[in-house]
Structures are given as structure tokens and as C-alpha cells.
Length: 143
Image (tube, rainbow, N blue to C red; front, side, top):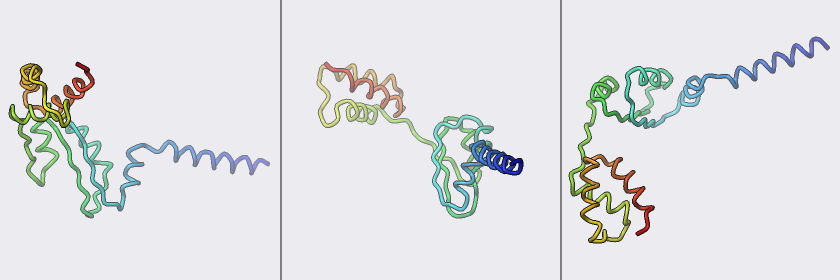
């Protein structure tokens, strides 16, 4: 009976070890030998990037990582083999078109809302995410 309890205890410990496996080790194990595309948004620190990079296998099989950051130094640090792609802000016309598409879909903006809409667009300062978030809120408002 004692031998049986030892075996059960060992099985339980083995199962616990698998369940307690660190998330990073689990990700590495899943990606190892596979080709993957990883998109990471808004990376701010080199320490965070270093932590993530350590768990990603580099098997030389064409896997790619795309990351976004507002920090020029972070982009240069992460992309030692290629030049970072610097995104431009949207101009006022592009911003206005995006707001209209998101708020009114296929309809035109009512003329009485155009001035306030363009004021909102100016306050978003060409940032597409800001425009989309504001548009999402505005699209739920009924007139």
C-alpha cells in the first residue's frame, strides 16, 4: 500500500509541475520549431522587450515579430538588423474621412455636425487610434 501511495504522490507532483510551468516556458514550447508572426503593440521599455525576446525561439525558419512603440530609442534597440518604419500622423483631411467613415459608415455627415466634427478631428492631432476611439463613442450617440 505504501508503494501505491508513493506512486500516486509522484504522479500528482509531475502533474503539478506541468500545471505550474511558467507562461514564458509554455509559449517557447508551443512556438519551438514553428513558423510564427507575432504582433506586439505599444512596447515602451527595453527591459520588457528583452523579457519577451528571451522566450521566443529563433529557429531560422522565417518567423517574424512586428512591434509598435512611440519611443524612437526602443524601436532602434529592438530592430538592430533593420531600420524602424516611422509612421506619419494623419493630415486633417485623412482624419476627417476616418471619423466620418467610423461614425456615419456609408452616409454623409449631416451639415449641422460638420464644424464640431472637424473640431474633434483637430483635437485628435492626427492620431488614428484617438480618432477611432472617439468615433466609436460618437457612433453610439443618437441624435
